[in-house]
Length: 220
Image 1 (cartoon, rainbow, N blue to C red):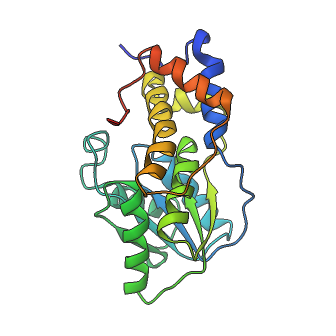
Image 2 (image 1 turned 120 degrees about the horizontal axis):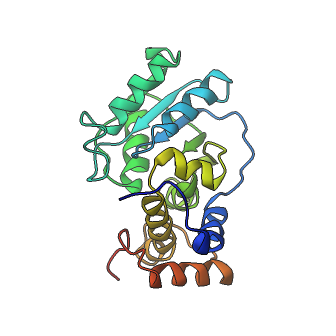
């Protein structure tokens, strides 16, 4: 049985991780908006919203499938994102899809290659992701594509509202814990630039792991 509400006893720790991963970048015009594939269709919604607001003239949706998305997006994350953006008024000619990436590193590398193949070499991009993916996406992009300027963006939703929209608070908590671990592990393994993790975030992470939120942890 799933619940959309964050348990009150865990709320402070979950919020510490939630706030840490939101980089609070100020939106500014860039050459391309990159919507990172996931189970969250809100990424495509917000990418379309920013396009219509004039923040970028070109969109790349990137993503194949993962075990967490195959049922919801059987034709692939990027394909479904594109279809959703079309219903929101984004013209087809503004959208490029990259349908093969299965992780954030591939999202960045394959997007870069797809743009180059299309004859485009942006100097700036907006990375649109789930709210708790911002920091990891930024760190990955700075490592894999250091010459491009990066602005990170996500739907501006309170934690409780986001969890309610996903409909599964345990899933949200597990994803937050997993992304926090990846900040350290991916830097150690050369996939991302290092990021400072404040003591309160480290402590919250450890308490949530001890509480059993380990489904998205990688073996160390």
